[in-house]
Image (cartoon, rainbow, N blue to C red; front, side, top):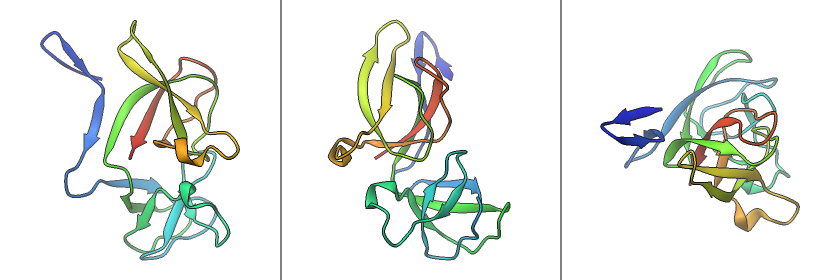
Length: 139
């Protein structure tokens, strides 16, 4: 977390003309122009033909083998420090849950079945339970 004077900021990265983040490639290689999603460990894998579009975090901008690093042109615009409202993994998008006035951070929860319209982003880190520090890419 960055501190500026007495104001604490939770924004880690942001981009006006497009956010690009680097990820390790998971169990399947990725290709230039291929839509990708996150696996349970935060690695990227190709989006499946029948996967819901909400799972897509962006487009891979080059070809990369399993275990290599790959850059993704993200659908989101900003990465923030936040808190989990319960255990979660990067597999599913998250929804806004609440604001924690004690920490000054927003809390996020995994979307439930048929809650795709509530999705506001994707967690980049695993949370073992409530109030874990997480990084979230917000749309």
